[in-house]
Length: 197
Image (tube, rainbow, N blue to C red):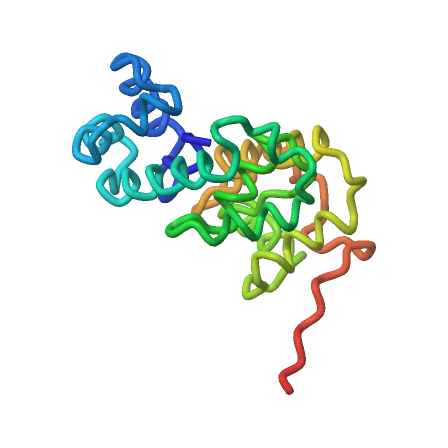
């Protein structure tokens, strides 16, 4: 859960440094994190960028977690995923990508994560126009893939890998595992444009 919040607007390498600082300080544990002052927490997570903002967001989410579960995530086992998602989205500074990452990776829920890599890859392959809402793109994946947490996890990881090494802001299409696929395959449907009322 910590990593999902720290990765906002940065890369995973910076998050690993911040998590390394938390481990080295012996505070990578719920109650130890909550016992830290915001200033000390911000200092430890500095490598993740926006450290003062992230310290407040992390504190808010951890306090929410304790209020909801008393520190035992199993208390959420019977809460439907979309209901839990809405509760988490009510926490200040925690958006859909962060919440969905926590749900998929930390809580093993069947929900697909949409990030900048996913948007870029889909847009370049003309599967979306690029103006679609987060939940429209998530629905595209969830309606075309079996509802399987491990599959969502692996599929997203492969998209991240393609985005990191090939589908960069300046693309490196040579050697891309998706290069063999046409940029617009006839079987693929674009998300229909919303009609304005």
